[in-house]
Length: 459
Image 1 (tube, rainbow, N blue to C red):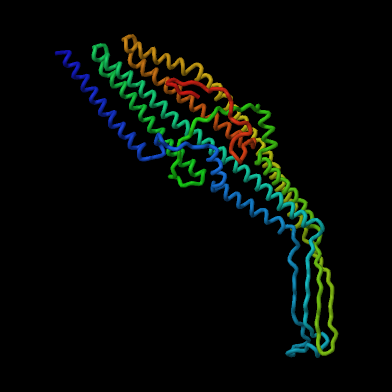
Image 2: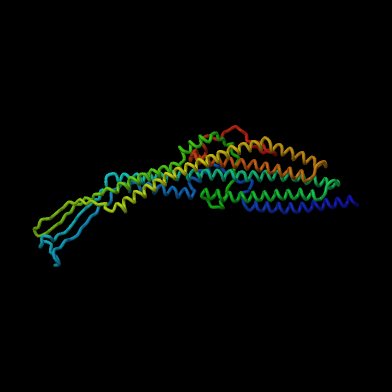
């Protein structure tokens, strides 16, 4: 009978769907089970602890710290006098075997000399070494700020990946409601089997996107481990939802903070100052250095010993091809250092404007999603689902509304991560991050609630 045939088709469709869902669910479970990092009971990741670990173990920071330490030892070396020179020898008269004590000009020879650079040269060498060391210190601080920003950015990316999985799971439950409605319509003769398949296909696509998010989590965990100086396969916990991060500064205030606090700008300034000292040093090379020497010549057999004092001065007669070219080289280096400083200021200014605009635009979009699109899209989906169950709308309408709801929620959390990444970058550029805790100078105790998403998710 027709009713029996329809019931048989429904049972067959349900068995096929259940088999496919069981297979896909097993794949997801096996994939998640193979990585304990994705377990629901994974330990909680503390952002400040991660930042402290990165600052103490990051390989690039350790290399930079060694360079800073080494540069400090160059300063006393540069300011020191050249080593004194000691000479000893023997002077013989004629080619007989030994004439010392027999001939007046046969004697032993001992001398000690010390070269004294022209006044101001040692001081300039010390200045160059000190400025180079200060430049390396500033670069090390810049590397620390970038590391802190990288940890924050990866942390928020990881959090959003987990949040996206929650959203996908929630909307997968909604897709079951569409399938149930399609099955009921098919049983009553109001719908077609194709509608059931469409609902099932949509759920499978949600499972696919969920698995892609899990893969993204694995990649982000590897990148975070690398930043922390850990093995790429070291276990990591799950990030928690942090309080809303306020950012109250205008572009002008951020630019002023960058000029005052940016270690990259500070490094370029020290490099320019070192280049200025090199120019002065090159000009000092026009002046001769002085070497003082004392000699003693012992004799034997009643002959009087001899001594002498000498003053030696180098004559820079090849200044056209040596000293003058050195000055030109140093001046070119100074011009290059000043241009690097200007370029760094332009780059930081561009970075501040870009990230500041990103923060403000993300805030507006999050507000739009939170207060407008997400509630309306959720309401639209509920209406479409009710209409489909009552036969007033088509299955494609309910499915398209579900897709719109999914895209809107995922875009909301994408903008959340985008905003937090931009703030982390701004903190690094303007130097507002403190290395002791990794948090900003204004604690994130803001009372504002970012929003409510369907299903009880609150931010």
